[in-house]
Image (cartoon, rainbow, N blue to C red; front, side):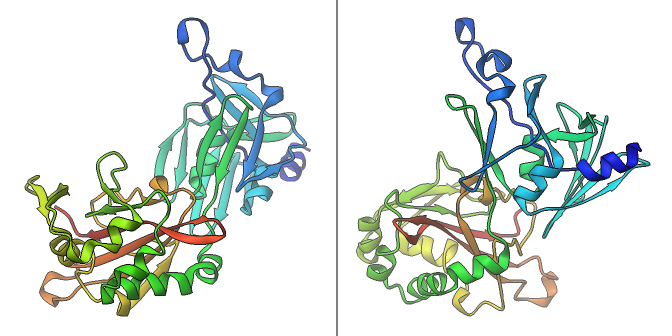
Length: 322
């Protein structure tokens, strides 16, 4: 009987830290947002939960089955081990009722609150489930809403952005700064010399500054060189040659839409830095055979929708780092 009930009610649940101000400004989860007010949106659409969410140890627990359907994930349930497997290409996660450890894309994740079975339904932490499917989670204390943003799948992302991305990478190749400037987001475009996006320190240029970079001789500090830690002090033209168009990326042999191709030992946090973006990667897997692929290079362009158009918000150069 238990096996049958579990199979029927299995669904994907989520956990978020609920933060509000208690006395003296101390975060107080339970006092800030009662469980009955919790709501979830996925890519802006409100998900109607038939089973009530609840707060446990400051975390929101949501029913697995309903969240799985909302996130477009596939589920399987092993009643013997009480383990749910959640799949949404290219991601795979496993979580076991009663265990504080879970698996996400082959790695072990420690949970603040384990998954559990209540009333024949499986509930799991919100943040784990969102992030395990490649999503990001934010929490609105005022409305009691957990907002999940899931990236488009590679096929849908390509359909949405391929022409726009080609226009951008060709503008970079040709140094057509007027065309590129017309594609820059109103908040500007951020330049990251390596795979890790530093939202606090990376340089951001406005569309008007991009339009003028062809004659801009300003020496800027773009970050720090991998290995030495020395500051990257370059003009835009010098930075372009080393950390933007260091290879003919417009003719790159591999491309990925919301897919990571180049991987090294540098933290690639582009999805967290640009949760609403489509990320397009242009990749060379190496140039000199003696380096066995350790001289790979990638250029990633991040586009966010603004006013009905996909606008460029990030230019990320990536390569093997020490």
